[in-house]
Length: 280
Image (tube, rainbow, N blue to C red; front, side, top):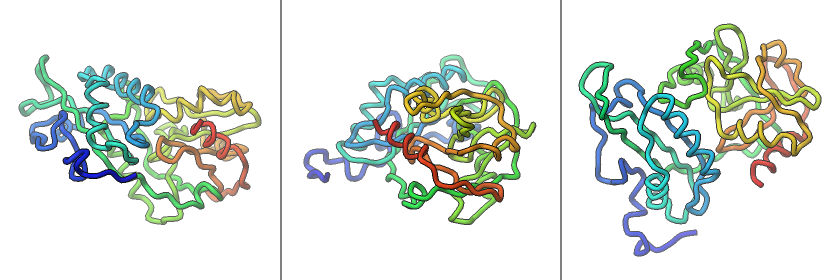
């Protein structure tokens, strides 16, 4: 729904806020720029309201705590989202960097974090992804192990960037990433689930990977669709034997995989059931 500019005169021109201000610039000494020293979250906003905010903020705060980064308050972030979105729909991206420091990896104990909130348009995915299912690509890149960073959505995403550069076929929705031991971990922009009968498995993320909010929601709510969900090590061979494969993230919900690694699966109802569950 559109609203007059007089209701919020800066709204139509505000696409990003840095520490709550539109006219600030990020310092060239910011450690997020220099070292990828920070974390981020991406989630939909509907009518100005961030979706599943409690879970998104909990994960943001948890990731910041692991890296010992000062996490912005909920109040500050919600005020930024309200300023940017007013009553509109879109996608919010929150970036929290450790802050500014002089050259070198060390940083002062009193460093102050920077918060960046971006307003972006909602992505337009092909309707066929939901109606018919998606195709996946098996990435050559292997994720390295770093237990200290496992599960965190940190700013060091070069592995995902390099993996995503491996294909340019628009019919491929995402790429599957294995770790250095050959275990299935995730996709470049989504988490992955495999159904075996009434068991719904998602990879353990003890050594690498991102533990997404939608992944957490599916793990918690799977019993509502008569499935027992758990985390486990999944090899590529085991994944290929799954009755269904689902990928998920906070923006598109859940899609069924109909083709991966030269194997096809018929369209089944689980992705639609999970999508309805996530929307409820």
